[in-house]
Length: 128
Length: 255
Ligand code: SF4
Ligand code: SF4
Image (cartoon, rainbow over all chains, first blue to last red):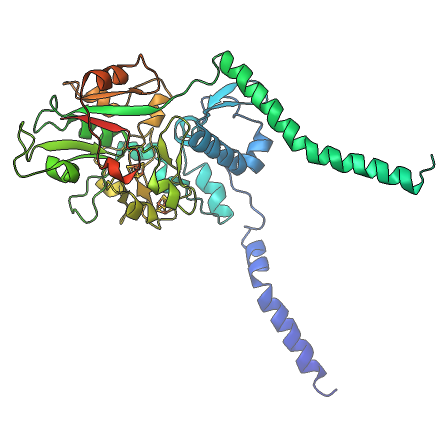
């Protein structure tokens, strides 16, 4: 075991390098930040509770899509009995008109790229 | 409780008999249900169709095309190779190749006919679509679910009327004024006329029918004997495009 010193030093350097992103963010003060969403909305409450929307909006939108396109059923009855027109462009974006500060903030943070906007029109784009 | 071998076999046999009989009972009870509901008038037949009166259609007028392509964000790509169209014109001879001859009169020769998806009764496009992105609704509208379309273009090969267009390129730059209430399409999907199903849901008539000042387009339910389309079909001689192919096109033409 003549090379003990070298080996341990090597392991330490290796560990430092592999954890670089973690401590770099810690030093830079960017560790574990959560995206700040700006909610611009005419309504006080989304179609369902914030907690539910945060975790399940993609499932809800999928269900809306299938219901409207394939079954021609367009009215959503929320848990509290309120009725909504199931439409991403006309219902969701009517309130959340700030896609860049709302949708994109989280999606970028999580590195997800939903394809919704390839077809559905974002309100700002109308002004073009 | 004690069960001997004989008892066990009896109970088992009865069980199997029950399983065998159940489907029969189901069918009978369903038939009763259907009978009951049709008596109350619940099962109303609906079949949406259109009559195009080419006699009323003014040459050079493109109101219906502008209206449809405007509300549905159909891109205006000049290059015929990439072009996208939901409703368009074609000369009579090309639109009705099996009802054409050298001496056609009545002003039909060379005059434009309005064409759109025929919302066929037996649509070949639906038959071939591997993802069920194209499907037929109960009211007869042949719909597309753009979310599911993989762009294989089987449907374009299957449709004998050229009713479908493929998005070879991103259509957005070619839309002059985007209607924010209706999605655009994206590169790589097929699109076609949807009989304005989004307008029908709001109680409106199709945009092309609404826009035509000459009443060349009439839309309605052909299963309803009192509807306007049925009245027109009764009192006029009408033809359809390539009826011999068996697709059952639902756009009727007065020539
Ligand atoms: S006209 Fe073509 S696209 Fe339209 S339903 Fe018939 S086969 Fe399908
Ligand atoms: S191009 Fe789309 S709609 Fe046409 S057959 Fe393929 S998946 Fe179906």
